[in-house]
Image (cartoon, rainbow, N blue to C red; front, top):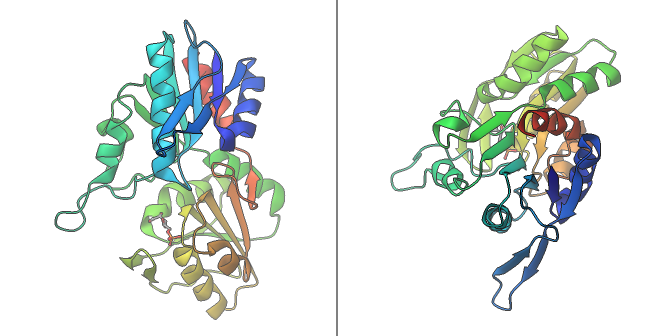
Amino acid sequence: MLIAGFPDTREIAKRVAQSLGAHYTEVKVKDFPDSEFHIKLKKNPAHQTVVFITSITKDPDDKLIETILASGIAKDYGAKKVVVVATYFPYMRQDKHFKKYDSFSSKYILDMFKHVDKLLVIDPHLHRIPKMEKLLPQAHAFTVNDLLVEYIKKRFKDDFSIVGPDEESAQWSQKIADKLGKKVVILKKTRFSSTHVKIKEKPLGKNIIIIDDIISTGKTIVETIKMAKRQGANRIICMGIHGVLVNKADKHISKHAELITTNTIENKYAKIDVSPAIVNILKKYR
Ligand code: R5P
């Protein structure tokens, strides 16, 4: 098995390669003068399973092209199997035509991966379409919920309740609370735009851990923090699987709460390493 990383997934990919006793290589990404990418593999991918570990965010469109071209090289040069592990997979929230003539993005973005043998995605935002396989048969989602459970058990000994800031978060907040045997409050959110949300008030508790899949602009989390503070909360922890953290979301959140994410997207709040979950799933695809 050959594990290939990109510059921003180098550390995770190296750890995964080491745990699996596999070779590591890095995808060489260069620009042509007209800004197109020139992608090259440094090792021969022939006759082995080649796994690309990619985090398709920050510049998601660039990262998509890099990942598609790199995995295409492995396919063309005789890899036995081409596997892409996306620690973060973008465009999943646009999972229908929300407004007349807007894009059903997840459908067409997933379709760009039909040349790979397996696309494994960490906690994609699945909502109206419950399984990635519905859009691309070789795509498969896996969760790092257990790593959050372990982290919470080690770090937080006080009594606390789990808060899911919206109904979509239940697949993380509810499931994590169940594993911890803790009370959970799932809130109801209305989204008016990408930066404007409203959340219906409910009693939250004194010590709370808010859990969501994606923290992007942070508006969802900040609205939840405001509610908790109005109710006189003592300690507020915010956990996100994917710290997209745009528009200084982290600054707004960390003023009032401790922010913790995984390293599916590298950032300074990434305290939970997802490489053990990647190793586990890859053992099935050797
Ligand atoms: C959507 O429902 C997701 O689960 C998150 O709640 C959402 O992506 C968070 O976005 P933002 O941080 O921009 O409020």
